[in-house]
Length: 548
Ligand code: NOJ
Image 1 (cartoon, rainbow, N blue to C red):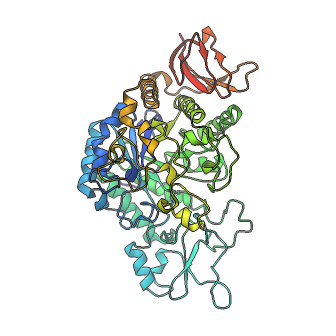
Image 2: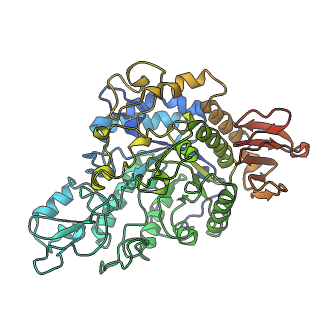
Image 3: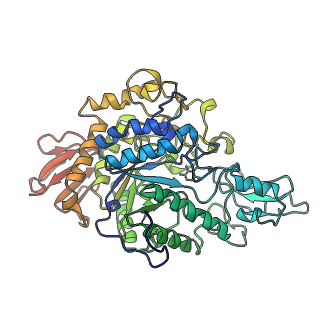
């Protein structure tokens, strides 16, 4: 509950703040578990599977947006920020879920979408009905077009999903939407917008949640003159990461700090350099920001080491922790990325959604190794649902089933993100492999049952068991690892191997095909992604060893 005045300086996060080393599991709700057979995952479905998450051993959940929404971008187009969509079970189901998660010791982060809402949001409907220059339009970014009859967009900015970032309305004005036309951008220079979001934050904190993941946190403010950007192949610095953005997060931090429990914000922040990123996680701004460099690194020892060093050096300078991740609902699944053996055909529209031939088995081995590499790092960890099953990307969805706006906005040239959002398999057989009683909103391939949760719990060598063992080790070693820095250890003549030490734990990863004989002095193997026989770690594998 709220205590005292929200104004004042940022409360310093304690060294022991729960989120400093938490492992948070991202639930993409519509694909997690369906309780009512409508083919779409929902909150009662999630609640019914919480024991599986505690068995897995995560510390908390990041719940993808579940507010009322026409779902043009699956919840990232919000109609009412203070309610829960009835299709997901409404507010009673949410409160029940929150209580049940807390009863199991799980933290709950919601996903807040402050850059834009849905074109069906009451504010936007009012803006459309009101004349140019009206206060209703001032909550969004409406402008006259260019050219003699104003029929050209106000500037040259492209939309994030393809096409222009501007759409023209009936009276001839244009509105800005950084993503789909169904997602109009708010005007964050209007104090009414900021006030509204203060209210939204408090609303959910008062209900008892533990924090927010902030959608495209760097985008809220645009250059006041909305000028053209000269080179659209480069990061458009007029459209994002504007200096005033930091005032927004100082204000949000004061709100979080006014509660007498430890809350956290984790920003999805896309900025050119890690020093730009560090500015978002100053002690009086966000607690965390995703560090994506490791996600974007190829499976390569030098690239991984560089990404880790850059993250630790850059973020530590801001006095907070790095928030690591290898996957989310916007990129291809990690098994597929690491198993890519053919050239990128480019049709994915992003290096993390490359397309081409995949060796799934190799990808699996590497992804298992990457997990151990990740989990011994200092900082918080974000996992994406299904990676604990070793699920590969579903690359061959039928075109008619694709729903990601990237598919339509790119003129059906980029497949987009549906392949990592296919509903989870819970059982080897049966209706939608145990996801629900009535099919699934994206078709699951026949092979999905081989990755089913139930099946994997029966096999101690499964990827699910590896995740559970690794998470339980990380938990057991928590005190030993807390506050301990990472120190690289040299392995002569093996540039394909990375070894680091933290608090008496050694993490060793072989990136190439060749095995490594583990020196006796490195200690006892407590966890490995592949069997270690006679002290030999195979290629494309990782192990943790306990010194002494
Ligand atoms: C980032 C989210 O992760 C993505 O899924 C969404 O499409 C965009 N922001 C727009 O909200």
